[in-house]
Length: 134
Image (cartoon, rainbow, N blue to C red; front, side):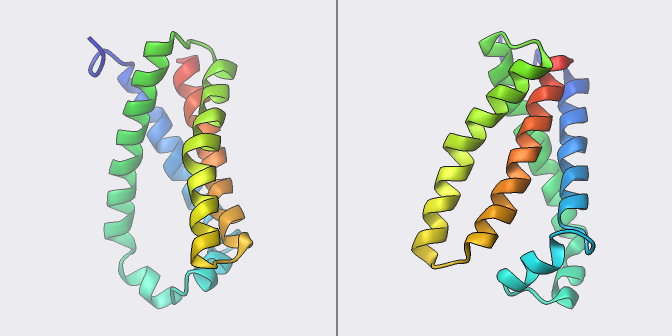
């Protein structure tokens, strides 16, 4: 039965990896300040809700990793490259294209699309690869 017979260590590792990627990607020395300006969030405002946002983000990443683990199990993926490849195609179809459409409809900068979609690309490549390899 799919759902609970996944490799829970792989799910946890993928969730932690995605959380760490986000921590680096949106850090003050990386894309964080530019992202904040594009979405019009003041640094003080972001800091005020950081704890709750990080908790929700980690839980959401864990659920995402669990769903991805179930999909890879269903597909019979058991190698890093195959997992990363699956992550890429999931990103392309279910992340990049909807984000691109939203960006265009909302009149937001393409730099915001690149920043956000880039984070999700790196995250899904890493998550798929980790789960596939474990």
